[in-house]
Image 1 (cartoon, protein in one colour):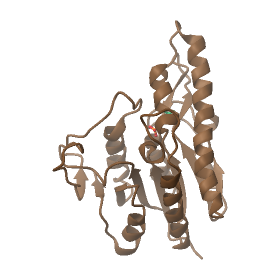
Image 2 (cartoon, helix red, strand yellow; image 1 turned 135 degrees about the horizontal axis):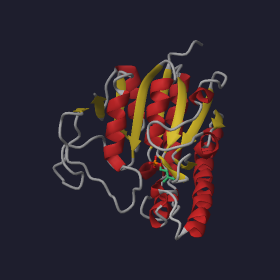
Image 3 (cartoon, helix red, strand yellow; image 1 turned 60 degrees about the vertical axis):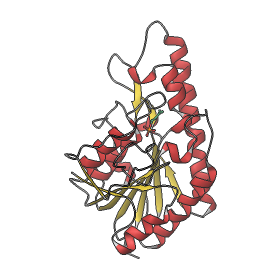
Length: 266
Ligand code: IP8
């Protein structure tokens, strides 16, 4: 079957792990999303999967100040932490891969520490490896600790920056989906407020007070995601923030053109 185009999906770290407790996996959430990924492939789309770090990356990265690069006074401990976070990210990734493979989906994993250098949207790395897979093989990557070519030596490359580059540079992306762990989309008020409602549309010039737990997240939480999503929406017409706990909404979106969640426009 000819492909209907590509769907790029990020499984947020707060969906696939408990972000507050070191290395706690949410396997049932992963399995639920992977079943939907199978359905999307059966609908005739190619997929690209990115996942966040959750409690397999953010807690130790925060504790050891990895996002700010090398600290000469704490070099040895930091280098050990970099190794440990990379190993933990591979462990988290292996849970996602196992879930996909249990459904007989074929995958190709591209750990950023092996092919990307630098942080932020302009990191260096050959994105074309993600379009070279043969049909129906799903390329997978994740937020990671990467090397930097400057005096900082290493830093954190967020899955949200990977989402930007992959959505914009790989041809034929029809949908870019950010799956969130604890909300149904972008909320009109901090999600802790019981009156908070899901915004149907979010655009950059609309001010929204978001909740960002800076105690845990070393990248940029919802604000980084929204910035990258708005930039992606200049190139991809369907960019959405959806509730990862209800992944069937992706199918609804693809089949009916609409669903519960937030559409991002630049
Ligand atoms: O959760 C962060 O990636 P993100 C990666 O996609 C690490 O922002 C290792 C903390």
